[in-house]
Length: 319
Ligand SMILES: [Fe+2]
Image (cartoon, rainbow, N blue to C red; front, side):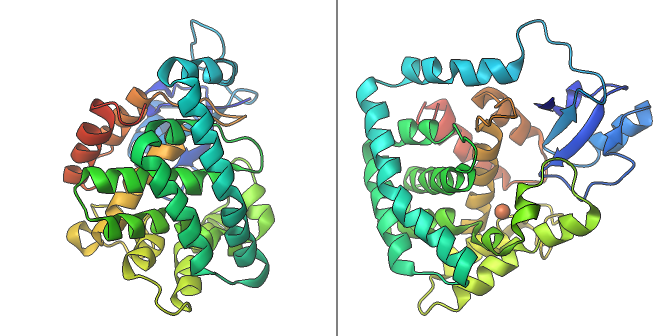
């Protein structure tokens, strides 16, 4: 079974299948962990999380039921304890309202290499409206990513996170709208990658990782063809995998050379990825995700990350 664990839980005897959001995996690191040196390599890889395969190596010491089953089984009751039935119902309705637009956007890109700004605008308008009063529930409901709807719900959740965070930062509604738009299309370039690469579970080869890493540029090139594509949206698409310390991709930009919209996107993108509930992975709790992001020195803009934690997490806006 594949299982997502935290870096400090890695032990000799485990089989590491995947490094998430880290540097290009080295074959010395991804695979069997046979020595303390392997663990050191892993700790220095700047991965944010690790997926182990318990059929090929040791499991983590769990003193309670398996995390995956627990996460899926408890998802609904968790949701019910945090939000009212009405909030959850409204969030589900908002998600369903945006589904046709986002589906069309993704399909247009995949089949025809095309993009319609007015369709994206319509979806973002709905996200902005719901996020006014029900952001927490919408972001929480979108955490459960069943098979085949991961891309849709991730795009939607990142959009909702960016709209909400933008408002908390005191940005005007036009800038907030562009953040929402950028969040919605940040991974559009993935639609232009081979489907079998996107479906592949587990370790990617160095070549496959190289192809995967072309998605920001591919998305940017698609959006750039559209007349009046807003600059922040292009920036988010192209630079959302850059890291504050200059170790990201595609251009290894550092600090303020990375446009602020893309620095906001990096935080929202990783937050949703870590806290999502997937059929094959245990979702991290909010506390675990935030702790890990705070410890990932160099990845995020430290001031923006602090603002995200204080204005979104500590005050309970997202749960
Ligand atoms: Fe991406």
